[in-house]
Image (cartoon, rainbow, N blue to C red):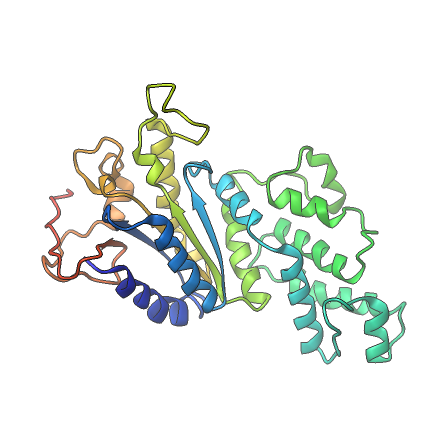
Length: 331
């Protein structure tokens, strides 16, 4: 087993400072021992991620339905400062094309035209051409995402929301808070974000973050609740989410798809955190109920005393030099 700080050092040096920053994507499963607090571990991951310039998003299966990929995207979207990212992209775009850009507080067409000695009526047309060239024609992002980001960037230029769809509607659509899809149709977006397009939206988001100057996207997904059965006593029940066996299989399928689509993603690092029952062969809610995921993360051969810090599955312990129990035959 590895100590948490040892593994955090590996993540920082080998992934965040190198592989992910240069366009890679990876999915890691972390199973801490019971002595390690999950909240503290996520806070440490957050600190490492933000210090390296990444957007950090955390998702708890007790609050978010992680058996649905669109629920995961919406939860991530609620943790994104969309307007700040749009301003960052627009300001970088203008600077790279020779414009003098005012501060965020003074950013408007009039100030831009004054600083650059350009006609105030023609400048929006020139900026829109740049957005079409460098944003709308960037096919690493899906079309609906590109349209949404175009609208948010244009709202930075004209905050009066004179465009067919206000920026608040765009953000509500991204967060899954839009009541009627008809509200966003004037922007040429004709469907909500569902399980059929959410994965492409998530991939587009990680690419967008890179364009705005971020190093990428880090997501921690705590699936500990999936290993817990709903209390039979009403006195012990609460309003948080519990998972049926069918829903758990859906969760594991979502995780399996994350692994299989890493080649299609970039600038993205996903960390799944689980409790020890996740790895118990006799646990009816653990990974052994779903071979498609089990075969992707369990090692057929592993050293009894040394842990491979680059493997898909990492066990963490606060105590050093803890031997790793040999895994059972997974065939």
